Each structure stands twice: as C-alpha cells, then as structure tokens.
Image (tube, rainbow, N blue to C red; front, top):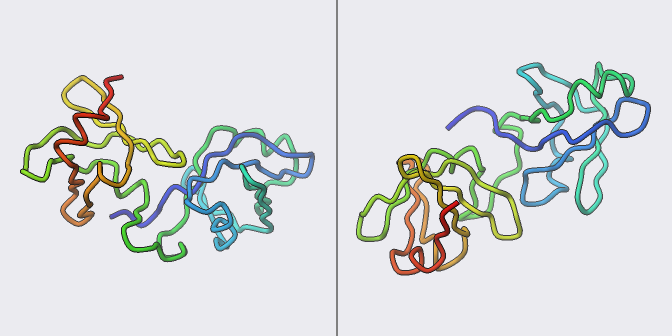
Length: 167
C-alpha cells in the first residue's frame, strides 16, 4: 500500500481568488473536508477552506492566491496522506489499492489485472489482459471480495462472463 491516496482531480480554477474546483474521487464528497493538507505534484499545500456541492469540491490552498496561479493546476491529481483519511467501511477500498490487483475467479482462474477504476454510482473496473482492455461493474454478485494485501480481486466466474465488456 502507498502512503498517499488520490482524493480528487482538479477541473479548473473557481473565481478570482485562487480557489480550485475539484472532482472528488471519494465515496462521500464531504469526506474531502477532513483533509487539512494535500499534495499536488509532490508539493504539500495547507487546506485553507473547503466547500462542496453535489458534484464538486472547492479548495482554497496556501500559496495559490489568484486565478492565474490556480490555472497552472488544471488537470492535476490531488493526493493526501492515507493516515489523514477517514476510515473506510468494511468491504470498501481506495482506488489506489485496487489498481494493480490480479482478477481471479472463485476457482482460481486468472483473468487479468485491474488497470483503472472509473468512479461511478457503481464503480467500473478496467481490466487488462495482454493488450486488450475489458470493463466490468464492481457490483455485488460480480465482485466476491478483495484481498488488498495479496493484491487479488475475486470475481464470480459465471457473472463476469455475463457483464464483461471489451473496450
């Protein structure tokens, strides 16, 4: 496991005072309010204020004083220390922990490796097998479990065959 987790992606500057509009990559947008410091491009920033709406978070960070300074951050990832993150519910995982996991059926057949997670109401796992990419929902009945320490996501062999889509 890594020490940092990606908690959002900067969409654009918001207003003229250097605030950043961020697409949160957390289950609950309000969880972004628990972080007192974040990292962008490896540099630490103190969080001065946070507000949220139903789709985005707006961060004011130390050292970003105006719209021109904020513009330089467009498209960058916002990271935070795992130790600063709120605890997860049983069976919930951070995206950074799922990416790189082997995908295996309950009988042990290896299908590929998780290359990406597309956040949605039901997350979509992107699996690579050789040069091909496939997608499947991280839904109950499809994903049977995950062992983050062993880097394995176990799926139902029957259900994965019904929902797996080649990209």
